[in-house]
Structures are given as C-alpha cells and as structure tokens.
Image 1 (cartoon, rainbow, N blue to C red):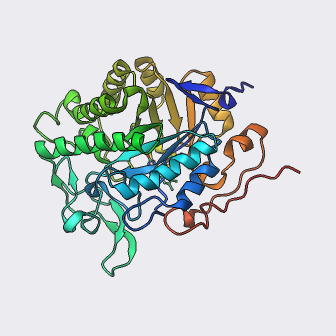
Image 2 (cartoon, rainbow, N blue to C red):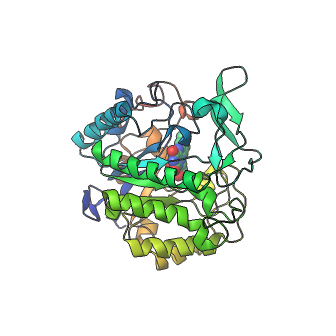
Image 3 (cartoon, rainbow, N blue to C red):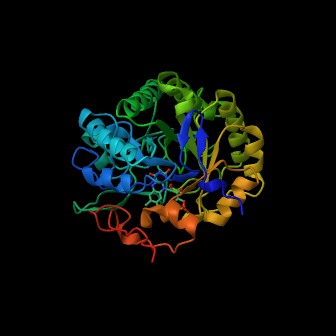
Length: 367
Ligand SMILES: Cc1cc2nc3c(=O)[nH]c(=O)nc-3n(C[C@H](O)[C@H](O)[C@H](O)COP(=O)(O)O)c2cc1C
C-alpha cells in the first residue's frame, strides 16, 4: 500500500511532516474573555505529530460568536493565548493554522454584545437551529437561535475587515496561516446558499453575487498575509445548522473552485457532513471540483487510513483531515501508520469541561 499519507509534504512553501491534518474542532474550553488557555496549548501540542493542525473555529469579533467559551482572535489577551498555543505546537514540531469564523445567523442574543440580534444574509430566522448559549434558566445549554438582522453593505465591509484583521492577528500570534470557515452553515456558507441568501443586492442572487463576500474577504486577507497562507473550508451539500437543500449547489461550488484556483490559495478543505448524519457530498462532485481546482485539496469526514490512502492515490486529495479520531488519539498519525488500536472517543466531553476527555486520552504504549 502507498505510504504517501505518512510522508512529508510541502504546502505551498510550508514543510509538513506528513499529509495528516487535524480537523478544526470546537471544544468550548477557553477562559473568561474567550481567551485560549495553557490547557489548550497542551491539547494542541499533544497532537502536533499531525502534519498540520487547524485550530477550532475562532470568532473574528464578539458578534461572530455562536457558542459559549470559544476562543476569539481579536483582543490582546486572546492573541497572547494563541501565541502560547502556537509556541507549544511549534516546539513539538507541528504546524498550526487558525480557523477564522463568523457564525452568521446561527447565534443567540445572549452571546451577542449588549444582547443584540445576530447578523446574517437576511433577517429570516432558521427553524430547528440551535446554538450553545445561556438558556432561559440562566444555565449553559442548547437554545434555539434568535432572529437575525440582515447585514447591510456597511456591515459586510465591517465583517470583511474583521476577517482581514483576524488573519493579521493569527500571523502576529505566530500561527502559520489561516483557514476561512465557509462550511457547516455559518456566515459564508449562508451567503453561498441560494435558498438562504435571498438578497437582491450585489451579494445575493446570481452565483457570482453569492460568492462575492467570501472571495472579497479572501482576497483582502490574502493581500494582508499572503494567499499562500490562506485556506478555505467548504461543505458542499451540507445541512448542518438548518441549511436547506440548494438546487444551485453544484454550480455554486464549481464556480467557487475555479475562482479559488485562479488565486493560488494555500488549500481548499472540503468537509463531507455524512459523519454528522447529514447527506453526503453527491458522487462525482469531488472529481469535478478537483478538475476545477488544481491547488492542494484536503478531504475530511469519515476517513480512516485506507480511505485516506485511496483518496490520495486517486488524486482527489493531497492531504486528509481527521476530526473525532484526533479527539481521542493524540498520537493518531503513529497509530494509523503502525495500525495500532484507537482509543474510543467520549462524546459527553466533546464540548466544555476541563482536561477530562481533552488532554487525558492516553498515547499508545507499544509492548
Ligand atoms: C466536537 C467537534 C467540534 C467541531 N468543530 C468544528 C469547527 O469548529 N469548525 C469546523 O469547520 N468543523 C468542526 N467540526 C467538524 C470536524 O472538523 C470534521 O469535519 C468532522 O468531525 C468530520 O470528520 P471526522 O469524521 O474525521 O470526525 C467539529 C466536529 C466535532 C466532532
């Protein structure tokens, strides 16, 4: 079998020790003020044998938040926290990108500054969408999202600038690059979706208009830190966060792939939500995206070593990201390479809490 997954790879000019990526995963364990903690630095450093770690989603502003205890990337104390995380990962020989994030319409007033409404492409409130916030009894829990207000053109410009500043901040904090989160039903995915984005201005309607916000943001972030250090994550056909089926899905993502190709970005990261219990990416779409986008592709969603080898061997993926397996196995690359058994993940400790289910998963001890 090919060993490519375990061999070094150069991402643009960034040398990686292998083609294994730790997928971005929100773990809701940061300190008051949305500040990354020393425990988070330990958690990421434990997983630094991945070729590349993509951080949990990191909100670009207080209004970008959709969960309690997610680490921001806009205040000085947050940057100091990220600097410690980046130093710990680098000391352990790893690489770290920040996933920069705005949840858009899937948030709750209690998470917003001054209890304001969340902001999205329109003021339509998604049905059956929840977020992790303070409930009516004042306790942390899953609550229905609040009615958003539509971003106006000034709002779009403000959010775009916040992403650019977040990209600068990530580099200032010593991280190796950023991934713009355009997947999983959050802000940019909401703009991409023809059913959700019913705006009638330059940011809604046609495929070009629905992609405009993401591409403008990418271009400006890229101008600030280098497009070769800026990746993008998408989840074609995703339904997470109450996203509706989009009849223009394929046309949208193929247009986007071609636009990303022209820009020479760090990578295109494609998440299949099938492991979330959602519909999979339709057969045949990944090869079409591959034909349109010639840069590095990361595939994610339900991979094991054999599937990863297959995807790399067929040329659809250059790197493969693993999510849940990395939660439970800090030494996942060695376990995959040597076919050692995997620890079982404890789903009760995925979001929130302390070191339990976070930094206490054992490394494999060979006999
Ligand atoms: C606890 C948890 C938190 C996650 N948080 C994020 C996130 O912050 N950003 C994101 O793009 N995806 C997030 N995901 C999705 C993962 O990145 C990944 O796409 C998903 O787990 C599928 O990969 P897997 O089958 O290897 O686990 C999260 C997944 C889990 C399990």
